[in-house]
Length: 373
Picture 1 (tube, one colour):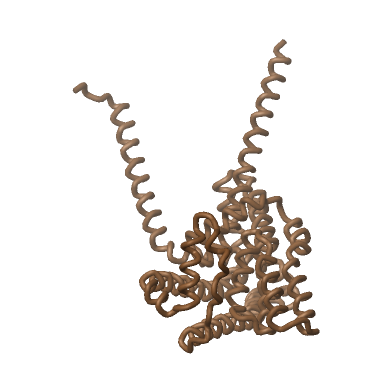
Picture 2 (picture 1 turned 90 degrees about the vertical axis):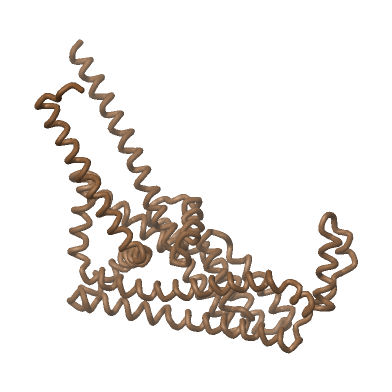
């Protein structure tokens, strides 16, 4: 083995020291992430809420005079607006589950027998007819036969409901944390600009921050906000009319609105159900008109709210909603599209900047060649 020169030893020591520092930094970052991970979704959602409420916070601050008081007013108003409808929908969901259990226990729930033509359906006709016939004549026996599968499904459903309840609690806690963030909004804005300048280069932080803020507000107001409004409008109508499972149906409307599917997939069958069960009365006609309009309200609000921000493809919102819900539950349903939209905008900003720099370099090279000639 050949001996190393002094310069090689110095280079080796410098490289070794750099690797040690990098390993220590990586270990520290990993440890910090492990500690912070349980609060990640909560903090991200709190920041999203704070960014959306901050213009209102500045308006109230000019009237009230203090950041803390303005943030407190916003938090209390948000609780007042959201807690009562959410409580009503949750109460309706609980009552619907209790009624379903009572129907099964009392034996008052009956399934009509299938038509003879069902057996002639291709591929699945005979099996479906036999299953349907047994459900109509011996529902308890069928339930005992499918008890293991029903148990597994029930456990999954209970887990989902528990996760939804936890998500609602996290949402309410996020409102409080967002109030704290807004109370320190000015110092937070300065820190954000410093971090953005450090990451994206001096002078670029403000542009990136504006882009991220516009994207967050556009998606949160144009997608999530409209979905909440639509859920509340439809849910209140279902509760007032006494629709079975009103709370669950309202949640389905919320999910459909976020993933950009029409709420009429729920509202139209409910309108048909009301007319079949209660007939064409003044109350049912008014209900049908109200629910039909509430199911289409997103078509009016989206151009007003989403169009004021930045252009985000609906495919990005859809993927973000589904992926966020798969990874982080009910909170991920709201966080996913916002985070993915911000990443999408930052990616295209990087692509356009690279293209602009390449064109500028090509122009400079052409000008240098022309001057040399």
